[in-house]
Image (tube, one colour):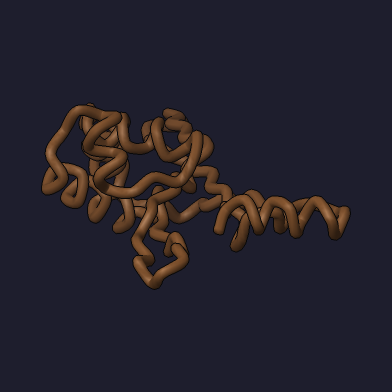
Length: 127
């Protein structure tokens, strides 16, 4: 599902956020697959506190979402998935206008599969 947002935060706030190298690295990594804070810290070469600060900032603007990764044995943990798919900035009649396009990741693995067997397989693989 794609969601277009016309009433976006102030241009400066979004540009500040997207100008941050750590925030961009987190968005890029989580656009491929949901990742835990530890995975993000390792992949993006930053500390976990830095990851958590940037994730909080990204969540504030709805550009990333937190999901729960269910593990057998009860050791569930949080993973983060980017919801930002496109950002545009336009200058028209003396005003800057921004548009953010967000996608909503599937609620569970295999949700988008049409075949029941494929859906079950995807769900099973992600347990």
